[in-house]
Length: 448
Image 1 (cartoon, rainbow, N blue to C red):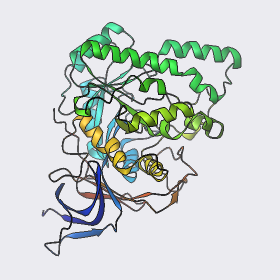
Image 2 (cartoon, rainbow, N blue to C red; image 1 turned 120 degrees about the vertical axis):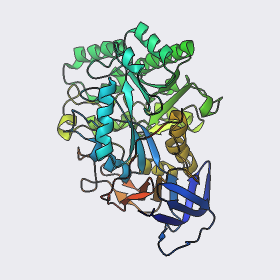
Image 3 (cartoon, rainbow, N blue to C red; image 1 turned 90 degrees about the vertical axis):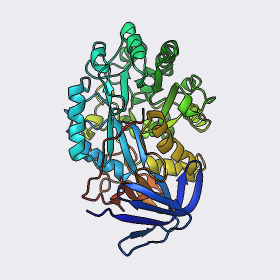
Image 4 (cartoon, rainbow, N blue to C red; image 1 turned 30 degrees about the vertical axis):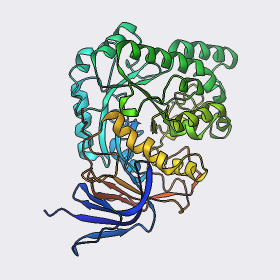
């Protein structure tokens, strides 16, 4: 079959710290050329005139929970990857706390098999560490798996790694990226008991950031960093939520040379504890959304490069589950469909440039995880591309939400920008509110 050729004309190309006007030629799975002006050499070339809209590299989301296997009443790889491409996310790295958990090579390969059949976006998975699976960790092929995920606080099943000797062994035994969720369980338990003593089961949602406090986050993050420095491990701290934690990270080295890196999520950049009153448990996440001051300090660290990556921590639950009281409502919410447009809203407000959005959501995840031939608009790279019209307002409502859970913390929000087209490996998979019935996704590979 002859490779199809697509020519994207009149684009504002957002790439490598610049916005340049030009054209992009796609042939088959790859970017064939990027230039000021490219003319179609044959009548078979499909021309898409984007009329001065932004073209970003496909977004790489380094932290999602797509709930398959075992929790598919909430979400599955097929449903959530559809929502992801609608939001401009062309590659995702999914977490191991499914049911069963991804803590053996066999279970890991089962997830790859599911994604190969059902995913609309490129995919990889984290391998989960526990107190007793070091033998399995040592079997992981670092060229074909994104990395390791350790829960040092707040997990399901037996995934809480709380044996310090085991933790040190894991840190010493791998040169893969170790991504960690950092919240100190002892601190959280103490804080929760204090609130239960006051309120019984009816704890107000506003107490969530007091229970899962700044102290709980900082104790755990600082210990993980200390251990990484001691062992030389390659550590990535997920979803920073406090200003205090940002002091633990540095911007003195380029990202490719950093041994200790960090991420911030959309919800910690968008919401603050003032939003609990209106949004309630719909913005209950672990770690908790904290104060306005924390949010400002997270923004500051993101923009001065102490924080390296923006991700979603997409973690859907059904509305029925989320509408429970504080003790029963699970933490997490769906975000992949609205992450890029939320950041574009911050661009409109003057908080961040489009170049910085591309750096934190496209380039840096590719550098950090050494993703092969993705994350940039470059000749010879896979043609994962997202076209964004920055002046085409739309409102989030039940009718246009693609998550299987059917709700969003952004419901009722009007965004100025919309994703108009998403390409995965050179194939148009999303076009103006419609996910197309084609699957072009591939398993991510890593240049290690």
